[in-house]
Amino acid sequence: MSSKKALVLLNMGGARSKEELALFLKNMFNDENILTMKNKRFRSMIASFIISSRLDEAWENYEKIGGKSPLHELTEKLVIKLQEELKDEYFVTSTMRYTEPFAIDTLTELIENNINEIVLLPLYPQYSTTTTKSSLDDFMELTKMDYKITIIPPFYKNDLFNDAICDEIQKVKENSDDYYLIFSAHGLPQKMIKKGDPYQEQIENHVEILKEKLKNRGLVFEGIHLAYQSKVGPMKWLEPSLDYILEFFKDKKVIIYPIAFIIDNSETIFELDIEYREIAEEFGLKDYKVCSCVNDNVKFIDSVKEMIK
Image (cartoon, rainbow, N blue to C red; front, side, top):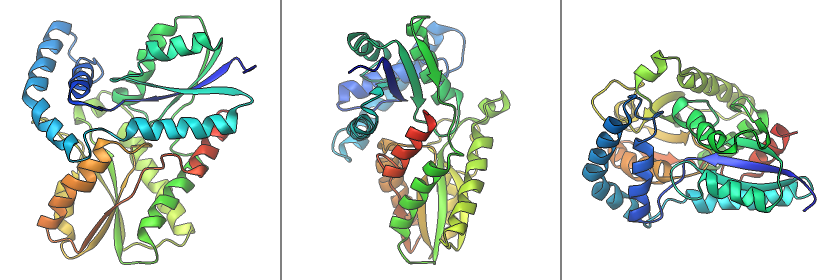
């Protein structure tokens, strides 16, 4: 390949075995962007406690979805399709924050391919210190000054990307107008927002953009709402939580779209499609559907091509 440029997709990673799940949890809870205390030893102690108390239960959840996260296989499909589209200009690959391939593995791959210019695309539509910053810091720490690097900013306003989201919603909605649509975003402790994390503001802005686009496409809903999933621990998190808001939809039909994710993962196929489905059934919802993420949707691929021009 004559090109000296690489497109690197950044994401969190996902477990493909119980051992890798332990590694995922270890790396995540030792991340100073996740557990923000400055004392590394204290953070490590807390991480060890969380892993020992949560690993078995967490693995039981993975077993319900086939014993692995779908994230890696879906990311590889996206990489292959992007490589086909960009073969004359880019070498396309990916790196994960908490499981292989790690940044060091990807950089070794780039060296082998004689790359000297990198475009980094964090696969998070909205910016958060817990996702975007964490992945970028991890990768940039290893690159030093050896490469010319371009970072693609949060892309939740990208029109083609939002077209891809509307496509996924329309597939599930079909021709029915009697559904409520809930955009479900991964939650964050409110203290992070108070410290200046722009995630909530960008999520809310994204919902408004999508409301307008859905309306313009003639996709009608009984109502459109925003909720937050994945709350853990006693501290105050972003509200309303998804489990709280579902209680208000007894005898109603609901579609869930995971607005904070690009690639389907354990939080979409287990949390949303299994765990929250059980909650919805307990509350007596008439119907409960979960949309796929955009994954390798052709319009998302076109949006990536547009973003890296």
